[in-house]
Image 1: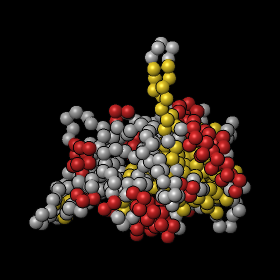
Image 2: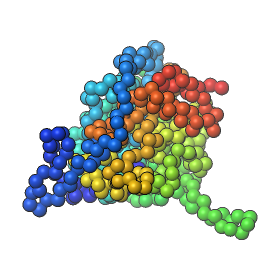
Image 3: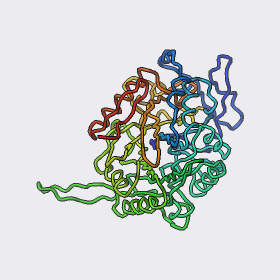
Length: 449
């Protein structure tokens, strides 16, 4: 996940807000010994551009047509990263309500859960504050998600105790997870889903690839994540120079391949989730929408071992789609819910000054900086399986509010933004020879030759 976000829980407990008559957040009269912040300049209160003009779109009708199924169809939806702390399942706007409808109507709805569900704020290990209480697991379920990956770099923000409580909360709400376990062996065990009334058995394996080995499991008998750790070697060049080359550790890749082989023996469809951070998210590295060659290795080796599809996340922007040996690889699905700026939880002035992913144009106030457009756009992938065969892959463009009271909340993209997203995804996918065909407001990936 991005760097430089959040504050310590001790600071968060000191934040006190009130609402003025105009509806703008104002600091209340400070209590003795309390620190307060004026949140009126927050991205949720301070708009710097007009909202997109409303469109006369019959979203109920559009989504109703997309949801048509044939006998025997199994529908799997997949999105990217979820940073989630405020309720969105009951939003009334058609473009938001129908997006949730797509998740709820799917047999399997997958996302990368990049926050922790626990009741232990005192266990916060890092600068980040991506935590909600146990009850919020019901909101994740109400939004439609029933399958998530936990192998990511925020799963241990509240230590192994926080991870254990998160796994327990998910289990109590019927949300299946992969990539984490009470032991390392459990973290490498596939999560299984069986659709009522269908024979198709689906499995998910989840792994995290980071640029350091800081998340490597220290005690295989305790709570762990499934990780693919880095290796660095020195290579002598012809000109006498020595180059350091970083890539995934071969033994970890082989362990993933073994997991896939075993999962395929007992399941009809095997999905692999890879949460990849090849470098930091500092804007010094630019918009990271191209997958490095050394990262492609892991995705393709998953398919070589028997995976039916591979779902990438981590870069927080879209990356290309490849049809490799007839199987789809989504190198990054981008963001889906991105509520990492919540004024009642995080003093926004600190966040803006510390967030190294935000663009820093000259002579622009820290309060007027916004996330790059690419960060706040993504796709919902809707896949149709029938008789254990992938029949159709549809791409539904999604935008995320980057200011205002619904900051971080997704919605179905309007006509112009939706077309831009799909065209960019086609450009990113072109090097792989992938063809994406427009269906008007959404698109479909060509699976065959």
